[in-house]
Length: 439
Image (tube, rainbow, N blue to C red):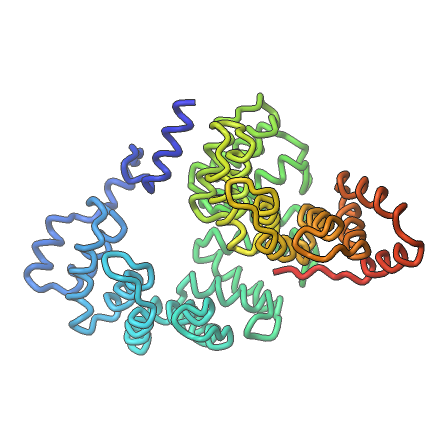
């Protein structure tokens, strides 16, 4: 239990106060801070930029965003394109300076027009995400192409994703495949993982599980999160020509978790939670769910909320449960929206509020979440915040029951015997016409 609490505490401190092992190779690659400082103070622009990046990343020196800003700002003021791109990163993340997307974009553009690939990529990223500008994936693709032509791996990967998804560009699986291969040839684990996905799914290409396995393994060997997780999934499910091997699966998931890959953390948490190939351990499950949750993973936030709601590890705490469920709900994650709606309906950890409950339950139910559908049916059947409407209640029960929700099945059976045949048929027709809206 102590180890679980310590690990969670480390995560809460962003791991800055926790011990970390450093390999000899990593240590040798660290910048010579003393030498860089001397050169930077003498006016060497490249040294200023490298010193600022070292402070930003905590490479060879304790991370210090204020000093990162100081040196990058000095270098950028000389018109150095790389410093402008790096300084833009500080503004976009609010590190050492108030977050300012407009200033970040200004700096990225100044860098990009000097043909700096990182600046071009960053302008593209701002357009793709709609950060500080109106979202425009076509414009993002234009900037990504400029950086990709300079073999900037992040730009190649993002451009390939746009082609694969048909976002901002006409869908083109052949071009996506070419770009992912180019990325892989440049040593990108993401490129190998994406190739694995293409051959695994067989979308836009002939399905080839063996080739997918090979690409996933190459991605995993490079420490890519997607590749590590994919290898774990393959051995857990016994796919791609491999026999099921839970011990192997756990090893791959653990490697992913050790690299702070959120889906690896979730998988290891699930193994401890459900006792997959091991004894259950609520403390370890809580630890890994917390690590994923604190990276902003909505599933981890939901799991952590449930740990507090049910008191699986620490004492039950509805306030903490509501906090984590709310984080998941705010990401439009339907199960999180259901949990928030349920807590408002029941008054758990918050004052009962049927209007709020209905709002969150509807958001969940229209996405097809069975819990949200069932609880919304309860609200309509019992006139909780809305006029009683048995047809609508039955519709939601039927939709939830179709997803094997046993409570909904029982509620539907109980309700239909109290309704006319015509009303039951109307509810059935409403359920048949329902199309979930995926966020």
